[in-house]
Length: 181
Image (cartoon, rainbow, N blue to C red; front, side, top):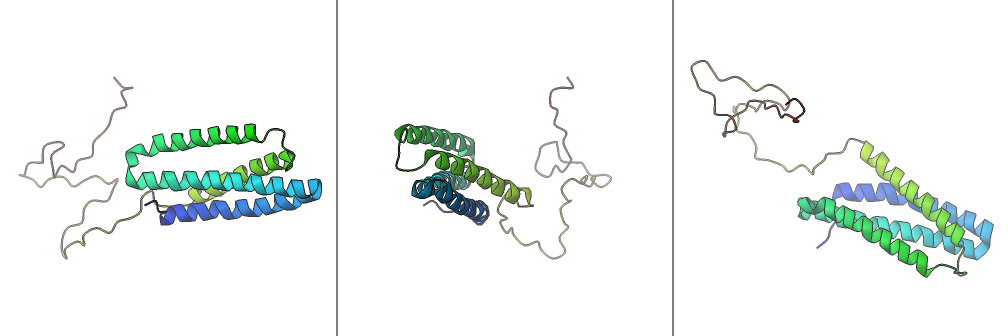
């Protein structure tokens, strides 16, 4: 079943709410500029943006939890699918007089920009990269592991260090980028 995590729900709400407000403003402007057809164009522009972006967020969020290795192909696939669907929609609606296509276009562009700004503003805040999973509680009196980014303690005099890469090896490793060869 496709669900949505807490972080994804926050991101969705912090993007969808400002976009809905922008769509409401576009609706009023569209109605004032082009009457009922302008209002309909604004509503359709808002709906297309919200539906496309919400589907992408839900699918990519689900894949990131279910199969992280497939995240990039899924993100690119949903992007390609949205572009193809949008091209098909534009081709099918070419020459329509049911709604104002200029108001539709301007509303869609404005809503995409507002949605994107909502995502950037949300992701610019300090959010964990992963959902924390509680680990086993440490036994009272057990030595704490060295903090990330601090040099590990050297072995006591007279004891051998674990071989590099072996379980228990706590030495920091340097990874070469290949440029210094």
